[in-house]
Length: 101
Image (cartoon, rainbow, N blue to C red; front, top):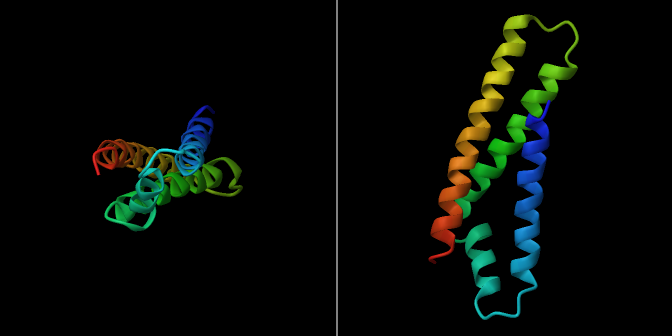
């Protein structure tokens, strides 16, 4: 489905932003990246990244698992959906707060 594609696009946008911020000639751009990765916003950033990765793994289990019951597939899809929603909310908060730090 389109769900894994959306997750990959979000992760690609994060990588793209990190590359653009790191190569920016503006003063304080590298500081913003450091704050995001290992500063005051590190915990929400890594939680958000883990949420996206867990959702991809959950979708792989649901689509590739042979011999897995319907209940387990449903649970992995629900877990993936919840992880993406929470990670997206954290991503928005990190981007808003990160722009003000």
